[in-house]
Amino acid sequence: MALDNWIAFTFASILLTLIPGPSVLLVISQALTKGKNAAIMCILGDMIGTVVLIVLSLLGVGALLATSAVLFQIVKWAGIFYLAYLGISQLIGAGKQVEKNSDAESSAQSSWRSFWAGSITAVLNPKAIIFYMAFLTQFIDVNGNFILQMGILTLTSVIVVAVLLTGYAIVAARAQKSFQSRKAQKAIGYTGGGLMLGGSALMAATR
Image (cartoon, rainbow, N blue to C red; front, side):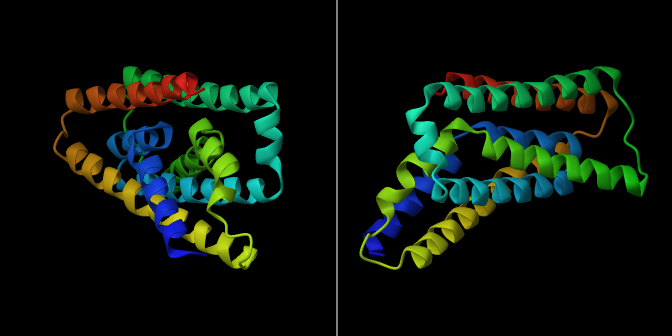
């Protein structure tokens, strides 16, 4: 793989992740409402989702989605409704102002819910689908080792996602620690739900 191709791909990956989208808003929401650990699990899920998208692109799913507008819309709206569901659930929880459960099993279940939320949102994110499935091959040198190049691009994507989303999560988690009163926590809950609904709206606006 030519160095300029790798640099171009890295820069494109940074822009894709840095610009607030469904995954960014979800991670911020998790950090605000559930704390650092939930945000970390959400980021791990997003990383797995990124790998899944790349693997699917290798299997030809990207070409199928590119040629089938109906199938692409089905995938897109599945992501929209899923993130909207998470947002509405968060708003309902904030309205009830349920106290945090310190039980270890409950905490583990919450962490895994954050993980699956991150992975599913990543896989169903139309912006990421378009990038990985439609444009990924443009960075591949046809005369080079295909498997090695895909490994490099996959690792690059995962690192970019991990670093940038962690940055968002750290900022949001620090903000969350500054507001410990019941009223502030309720407001944070509404904010988190609103962010997820905002992510759903961004997905709907993606063409």
